Image (cartoon, rainbow, N blue to C red):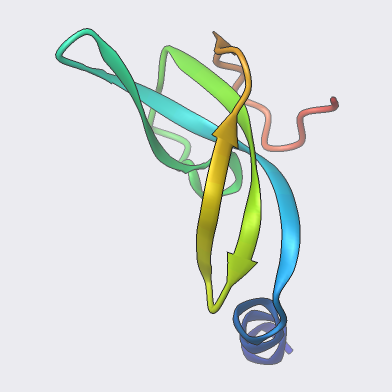
Length: 78
């Protein structure tokens, strides 16, 4: 079931909105991964909501909201 879900996620083009963890690199915030992919031992200082068009598993034309302090919960409400 997980494999089928992942396949559909990659093949079906759509607009997506998700929270991403941000890492500070040379005084700039860089998206690292989706909040759902953060492991228990990992910690990030910031996170932001990203919006974009998902095509074949890649986000095209990403837009990022304002950074907010990182919340460890994987389910963040808007």
